[in-house]
Amino acid sequence: MKKKAHSWLIGMMFVLALAVTGCSSSSSSNENGASPEDGKKVTLTFMHLWPAGSSKQHYMIVNDIIKEFEKENPNVTVKTEILENEQYKNKLKVLAASNELPDVGMTWAAGFLEPYVKGNLFAPLDDVLDGGLKDQFVSGTTEAYAVDNKTYALPLELNITPVYYNKEIFAKYHLEVPKTYEEFKHVVQTLVKNGVAPIALGNKDRWTGSMWYMYLADRIGGADTLKNAINGSGTFEDPGLIKAAEEVQNLVKMKAFIKGFNGLSNDEAKAEFTNEKAAMYLMGTWDLPQFTTNEDVPKEFRDKVGFFKFPVVEGGKGNVDSWVGGPGVGLFVAQNSKAKEEAKKFVRFFVEKWGEQSVTKAGVIPATKVNTANVDLPQMYIDVLNELNKASNITLFADVQMNPEAAQTHLNLIQSLFGEEVTPKDFAKQHQEVLSKTQ
Image 1: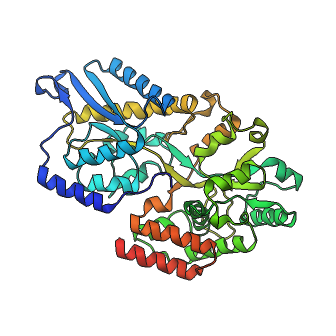
Image 2: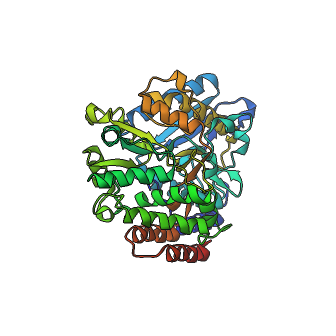
Image 3: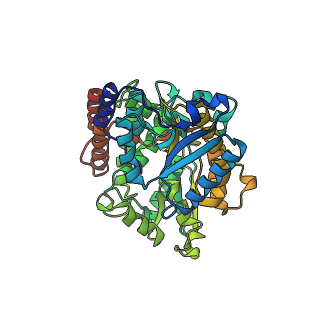
């Protein structure tokens, strides 16, 4: 997946480091050591990963938000430190080991977040969500940043995974957008019969195939079945999860995926779709600009691309408004910040302003709901945003949900499943074995 979960070993190092260093240090400063409540000058430190060079639009939005916040809160100055992605992650580890995190910073969800929470480094932010802010988030996004029912960061970005399709190819063979899985299989059969590759899939990368499995697991077993299997409250040997694995292999047998898919990278598969050699392509909305606003992609092709929601399975427990996806980065507040209330106030302000500006200025889909009546974007962007606003659930990418050992087992088994090298029952059994060891 785009954002991989990090090692539990790192987490244990954080905890041990905390035990040695204690919790005396602070990352915020204010004049005369006064607390924010005294009305004295406060400096908040804010570390983010959107430099002006590589993330110009993001950088400009951040600066605008900071200026606006400082104008409304004249006693607060926000001091930024900006690093590239990998540099940022490395600096965060170093600061965590000495318990000197910035007052506000960026983190990823699930496996990345948990070691910091276990090390008592991030402050709970449930109080920030009170007063209506939680209702502004798309369902399922803040939950990805929760540990033991407490929320430790607020997401800024969100990706969901539609099925993109070539409208011209569909029209040529008189195909309708499928609403049920049976209709979807009819589309596949018709395309195969006419010598057209139905689906572009680059499963050398494995997480690409995982999304197909996840959708089938959702539509057959329901939104919570896979999640419960991963967190230990359920089992991977649930009949719905085994049935989902069977359906993956049924699609392979139907020749639903492009030739050689298990040896192709995602970029190679995407090229098959953009070169109009395949009719469908399931991928996250980080690729949405490719099919809407990216001038490097011929407009003639972009105009042919539509999207649809993964169809419902007859007799299944899933909901068509349940998506596979997940949030990108989120904002945390350091547990030991001496200006914690001001930091929380800044996080709330930032989230609200980011949601208003990020769509039109940076082409980002925020984790908060967007009023599409107020934005000027290509229709497909607006349609995706409208779908997000009514999403009933977003299931975080399976490998991100899992700890690193289980994630690698999952990804390897996905490739074996699509390669018909493992039976659906053994696929489930091996998942359960590794999850039982590491839960």
